[in-house]
Image (tube, rainbow, N blue to C red):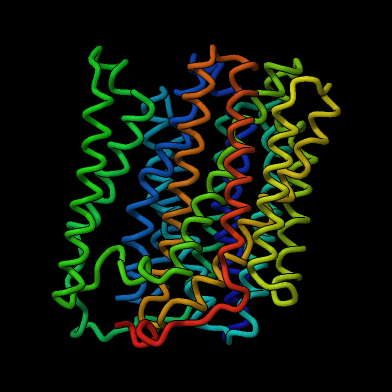
Length: 459
């Protein structure tokens, strides 16, 4: 393994994680700058996730087909281009377009990096390396909020996203030297046709679901469209199952291999991954609680989250160290228990500012644990080698689905509850309950992962 390989991967993941970390403290300023309500502000997360989901499936497939190196470098370049568009955005529509382009690039960075680790490292070392990816997330969450707060104090929110440009340049320069060229799982002549129908249906289904939940088109067009959109999402899901089943029967590589979802442990892993994404995405409105409920100035919102993000780093590092010792099941269980208790404490209205900041610390610990290497380790151990990239891609897809639902559900519940601090507190009580349900689901995982005989050959 090239000695500079892991630093390249970690810096790329750091860039993608940093963008998530700086968005949460920037939300109050962006709301004030563009006159947005809570649901509209949530679209900044929604746009990223909507476009990262089909990109994740596409990039994972292309990585298996043509090698990780070109896919990883292209993803980094697209992410940087989206960041530049955001910094130049004259209006909210352009800002959303930049977030969408970031999503296309970000969808390929993390699953490709995880698949490279699976290719390059023996099983005994994968857990630690994937845990370091979680620690990289934690480091980005530590540096992001105070850095965002500092930049918004001395300059403007535009400069937050400029941070991605030098990082992307460094990753691409180092990646051209360190990333292996031969990583495709099949020779070019043996590659099946790309599953474009599955890709389109993934995007169609999720777009219909989000627009149906948020009722964004209803307000824009002045018509009641959300029932039809939810029905379209259900139809899209049914068609996706049919299309992917037929693709597998023809010997084609489906965009979402259903064989992975039919394996019980992997299915549970992906459900928990969606829960982890929901827990991670729910941090986006915590700064809004600080400003609306505790009187914190908009520009200082990033500093309020500092205890949480410091805890996130500790959770990531600790989970990586304990993964081989305790096993993935116990690590994930602890993470969801921390998230449930932390979000429940954040939803309690009686805290003062200092009490609220302390309540965010279990949230940070929990996020650091559940986004670390435990769930990715299960996916690598349970998936057959030819589908390893697709299995990691599904981890990102389900994480993104959970994150997408978190921004949508919290914004919708908060606005229906009257908006403001009271609506957000009610929404976060629901988040705590959802994390408790995920903790109970974790008990269904077996302690030692293994691959069923029927799936080991990729059948």
